[in-house]
Image (cartoon, rainbow, N blue to C red; front, top):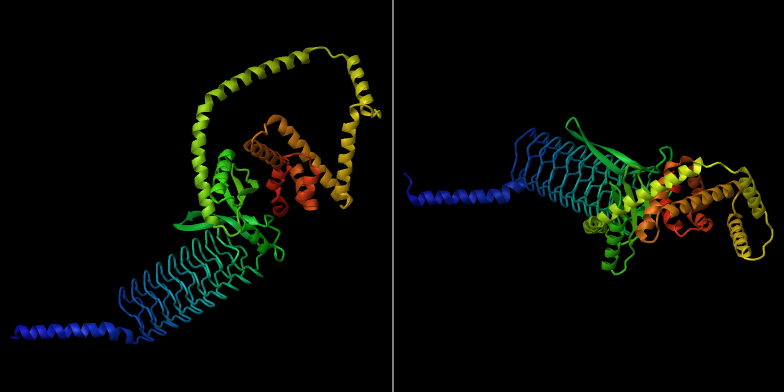
Length: 510
């Protein structure tokens, strides 16, 4: 029987062996070409191992340590690599199709021409990795970290990059056809000659350093709605640009659209807008940002109770932060105004009752007037007087000023329209006249003393134009014929600038 001294020596020898195995055997193990189909290697330490051309399809490698290993040409189809460490690994032409790499560590990994078709890389760390010509089609990359990664000529067709970080990465000549870039961060990202056709760019974040030169795109979408079907999450894209399904972006238009978006933030209001609350929140942020440009650029009525308010912001502003702050301040303003509205409710009820009584009196007066006999002689006399006044050429007295003003306005409008073709002149003149008349009619029914009241009237005007297809077609035609500035010159109304800003998108959308 071994004495205690021998037992202690044996234990010490085992510990030395295990330490040597951990530090040497694992980093030198050679499993190249090995068949490890469906093998359970969860949590094993294979750092530095050679697994070139090994068959690991369906293998369980959850939380395994594969850092600094060589997996080139290996087959890891449908392998479980959740939270596995593949940092600094070499995976050239490795097949990861349909593999599970949720929260996997692939920092500084060499993944050139690797196949990740339909793989799950959600929340994976891929910073500074080499994904040159990698196949990432239909791959889940939501909330993945890809900053400073090289994705030159990579295939990202139908990939989900929602919430992913692509900042400072190289995606030049990458194919992003049908990709989902919801809230994707792409600051200073290189998209030179990348393909964006059919991609969804909802709330993505780019800046003035984002490169979009020669980017190719026929059309994009600005919104996606998710739904579940057969236990699978699917999405429908909406808000196509260009809006006309038969149109495509002309050369350079897509880049121009995105560059314009750099200086605006879109606020979506699903259940209408409280303009007073919105103006309060804008003013508060403007003061906090020491006078930074924050103003309403355009208003779009979606006809389902929803509004999109486009706000001008400085080009280098963090649009995501601006949007969050504006919505937060808007909600606070709503609460404050809600209290105020409750105090004023009783007064409003009294006003409504008074209005109803007044309206009843007017209706009675109208009924009384209708029932009175008509004096034909009086009407004839009135008509004769009206005709005489209409064609009176005597310009003496008080009439001379009004008449001169009318002549001056006519001359100014004729000068503005002089450079347009006859058909364009007619379109512009008719649209300007109808918009002028609409604004005057609404001004008689709605007050325009405060900024909030002005915004409310403009909203009513947009709704009225939307509901009149003939008028809308004429307005769109006028915008395309002469543009915003020409219509501003033709319409004499202090609200014309705000209204035309709300209609500006129509000349591109229709």
